[in-house]
Image (cartoon, rainbow, N blue to C red; front, side, top):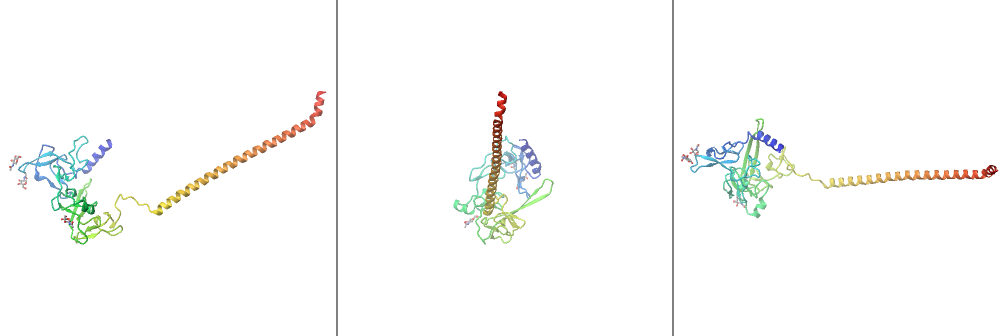
Length: 306
Ligand SMILES: *[C@@H]1O[C@H](CO)[C@@H](O)[C@H](O)[C@H]1NC(C)=O
Ligand SMILES: *[C@@H]1O[C@H](CO)[C@@H](O)[C@H](O)[C@H]1NC(C)=O
Ligand SMILES: *[C@@H]1O[C@H](CO)[C@@H](O)[C@H](O)[C@H]1NC(C)=O
């Protein structure tokens, strides 16, 4: 809990300059005219705080900050642990950026909010299965705020949404992130930003200028590489070498143990044998002593008895 609080505080300090929502809470006045999308961050900016949206009055000139009616994320920004969260939208509906209430998905050609592919209705299931990829929502894409399907084939004209998101870092420096999205079939094709035609995506190791040109959607140092987080594939020979090393190690260990055991037994055997020899020689010398005593003792005994 303590760590969480520290992290949230840190996140707040870091994100505070880029979170552009206003500070007016529920019930306060706001101007719907001031609700706009920031030109550099492309985030929706309102005068209302993170838990409210600017609801316009009937004549549209004045507005009031009203509690949000829906949420997009499981854990929306700005809500505390004990705050009641607005509901998520059902399938076939979406929650707009301002959280003003669930709306039905839009058809191809209709308006959508930036980068919100899920606001667009996907094509029929069988078509969607062929078009769906990590770069669209079941085959639907929202490009330049218009819904369409990512169904353009090789060599045909395509639409690009070329957006640079500029954000300000914690120490004031600005960094941009250019994202190019298009309506070619992915991941097999990409839309060339000059020719505006669909071309085949490049395979691993081929040269590239942008992520979208790579089938792996990851262009690092002008070369298409595996996407980050991709599990490392272990090759057959690596398995074989590992298994061989394990088997050899086990065999060596077993042999060493057997040899040590044999040496210990041999030593014990020698000790035992030496002991027996010693006992036997002791007995023999005792017998010899007895015999000598018996041989010489006949006279002595007589003398003693006399
Ligand atoms: C809001 O914009 C409308 C037209 O776009 C204009 O008529 C109105 O005066 C503006 N209201 C404010 C408060 O700026
Ligand atoms: C718009 O409605 C508000 C109240 O909802 C009112 O105060 C304002 O005068 C109206 N403006 C116009 C131009 O009708
Ligand atoms: C491709 O998608 C558009 C909508 O973006 C649709 O109108 C058109 O019929 C589709 N073409 C094919 C061949 O499915």
